[in-house]
Length: 333
Image (tube, rainbow, N blue to C red):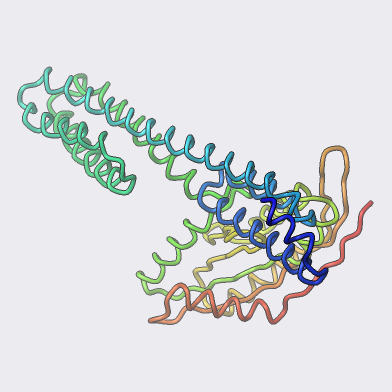
């Protein structure tokens, strides 16, 4: 650290400026990546690293390291807690299966096999394998419950209730994993799944890529909390401008993606509605202060064609979007 500091102090002004810009860019990318890996802890890291922008490299190194180490600890705890919760569910299901097996010997063989599998799943550390095995076991358990219900509804009422609870908790977990924490819209993972579903289905659809103009100016002038408020408000207005069946989500940063199950003409009409509804004056609130700004976005439309991959489709939309990318002026009141 001392030698690095001496090198920085001895470096020419131009070289020092370039080094500082590169260092802060690296911190910004690290914050975005960590936010994608685990939004629950990554958004806080992203804001903390962004707050270091403009400070000398020699003064922010230790601060950045502290933030990143804290993110690592918080993220590790988050995933450990989720893993423990899933394993708890598995053990509860195993106990329920054992109880039913003891009450009715006719299903002993089926439930004993399921119980053993659930105990084995609880020892898995691979989340993908754990989820796959769990869904298979839930399906088998549901089949057994339905068969038993034909003989005696009263005997399986408690089991049916517990299975419903487990399924609800699993669905809630999957829903959380598909939602962008900041805006409440679909996140990148969910959007990619929606694109793949439509490509496999093979029906006509369009994508609309949006890049909010002037977000950097808002962050630089009013702070990242104002920028976050802008993104939340824009996400809400964007949703209101769309049809109920349209899919809208945040890819990351200031980029949003809309998936439209329609032809290009209908998609162009949708773009017009977005300009009319979502573009315009916004009031941003940070603590006790409020700021006025005019918000717009560059938009790129692309029509999916057979044999086109999701990456190729998004590339077409990206090129179209950056043809009209502009900056917006921000005014405060």
